[in-house]
Length: 158
Image (tube, rainbow, N blue to C red; front, side, top):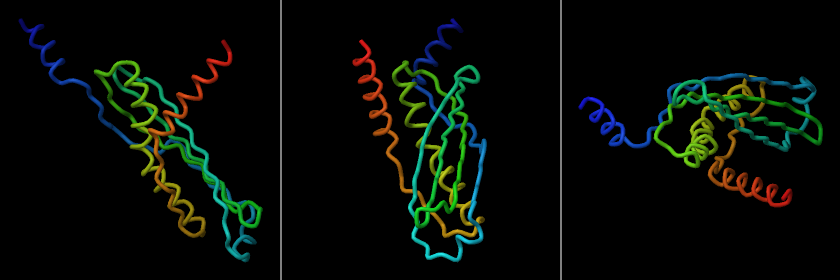
């Protein structure tokens, strides 16, 4: 009887997704042309590279890491480079494989992005540069684009 009750409670709970912890895994700031860069007219060109990765670290516990690299040039010369690895621990259960993949590839990185964006802005200001506020990113669209790219690669190799 107790087993039936536990099984019923699990079924009634349905899918579970919760963030347990947000952490800064790694951060790097380089300004190779300081202090000369501060004497030039400021007309920055911002480049952003974004990657995510995830792994299971326990029963229903997943680590998701959002890697952001911001490369800023001024007059085609490097001004600064910021690299942030923003991590999070998520408890995820009750999802099928496709839903789990989507949660790890889009929902979790979207949850981490505001934390990563704040860390980028904070370190840039500490480097004595103007604040940089990265625009919001549609992680669902990036996830769909990634799936389509993977499917296209699979189609061409067959």
